[in-house]
Image (cartoon, rainbow, N blue to C red; front, top):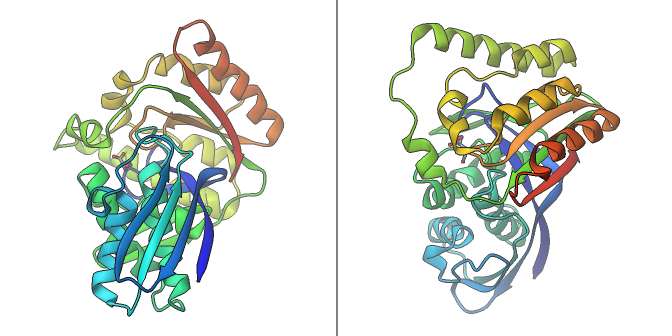
Length: 297
Ligand code: HSE
């Protein structure tokens, strides 16, 4: 009657895939417990780390759980415990890990009445509480692992993409908070056609590169001409981080989700280590507190 979960951190956008592309970080994430109880309702009974609200309606895990609970109307209730390791507002999918964890756990305890795409539809409600918009680019890789492409949110349609062997992600997280809603508000409503062409060319190429394990094409496609130019001002020393990562062998480097975390992709662990050192060099004398993570994908 109880399930313990690891709910992973994720990187959304992946440079050219704003709101549609994402990948899962295998080794960074939250811990959650979901328990079936007789008393009807959804109860957040424990929330450790980062002082998040335990009122169901104000907690991302609670909101997605409630949406699913009200639709299914099971003859029981659920308690949810959350040990948050992913800092909210870090840009590595903190809210998505919570939004997916609660409903994945409930679905397992109810005998899996829902498939993954149906689960995403409820998780979107929790994600919207955190970011003010329903987008599934962080949610999908939490649930599916690896790389995912959100073909559409309504109806939910997720494509699982292959991950070339030996692909690593390096993340640097400056300890400043960037609210997704604010990072979305600074984006323009209109995009010049020539930038749109570059971007859809890159996302198409990136998907092809994942399918063919073509690292050169992957590297060539990891650029963002639409969102990054506006958001990079929110991230201290972004240009230096990117230049250092590329000089040290990264395949590409960009803003993770809505920031402030920055990600780089590398072929192999040794290069990932070099890139993490390059990131470290940029921030070590800056007075900024930061964390660096290296994870296989
Ligand atoms: N695609 C989203 C954004 C991810 O960049 O705003 C952050 O939740």
